[in-house]
Length: 252
Image (cartoon, rainbow, N blue to C red; front, side, top):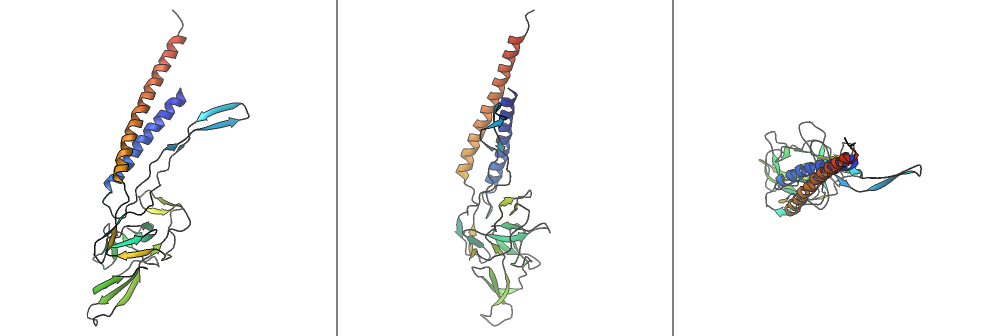
């Protein structure tokens, strides 16, 4: 009976955690390049065997809060020269507030007051050498598909372009990528792979989040039903326990 109640409580906790995850996903629907978090608490049944004498059915639960959906989001044309999207797989290298560098797909770029290239979340975009990219004053800017940034400097002859930096790009390396506790993507050891410049960049495009709104809403309804079923299971276990106690009670 205790195992039944424990399993039901675990399912309830998973349902509540998944509700929070889905709320976060839905709240980030309009965030460029956002990768939807995956639900936790996938479970199955197994049998444990001990010395050929004890067989016990158990329900192992996988509690992984770091998984995310890596599929690319839809790419939308904006014709803004600072909007960048990665075609297919790959990531930009970024950093914020001197924390550990991380990977991102967010490409709504801008140039801050210090002439540093960032995105709209004020995350500093790193070069292929893992350093901030300084953009001098210019009349025009082009970004090639390998991330190379060229500008037409002020007071220079028309059509004169100068290379000022290369945006760091990576396919992700060999280690598994996860979301750290700060919600940013790194490898499972907390680091990032080096720039390999293999992904291709499209200037004038933006990648939308990969959150499937309908899928998230349907899953939320199913999660609510699962919550209600497990609450009923606990109440049933309580009734069974009370019934068993009354049968064992000595007659007065």
